[in-house]
Length: 137
Figure: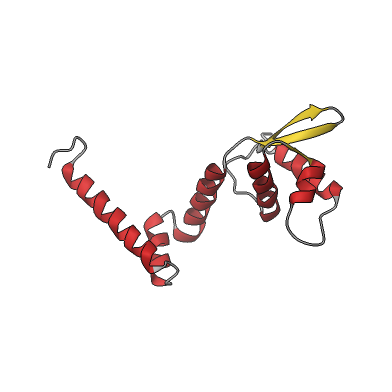
């Protein structure tokens, strides 16, 4: 049975651990534990277990350095964002990115300057579509 599911979104704790690794690069369990936000601090064994879970899922690699493993991310923050966004669009918006955008606009979760930027992007996209694939109208 295939254990790697790198296309699945990260859980909240996995995301916090990955943020530490994306910011720090390769790190030991102790380093990750110290850098995780929140109080009280998670137990060393909890962080170790989560890093091992991430390793089994194919989301981090581990390398033995002396007596401790160093863990490093196997995918970028941007890849995680795309995976999570795809999951949200599929589960909540029936696979429609347009529905997500319309929901954000309708709920007024977009600041006016971002809304203006979105409008410019849409206009550029429409103009490019009218020109055709080779720049001809």
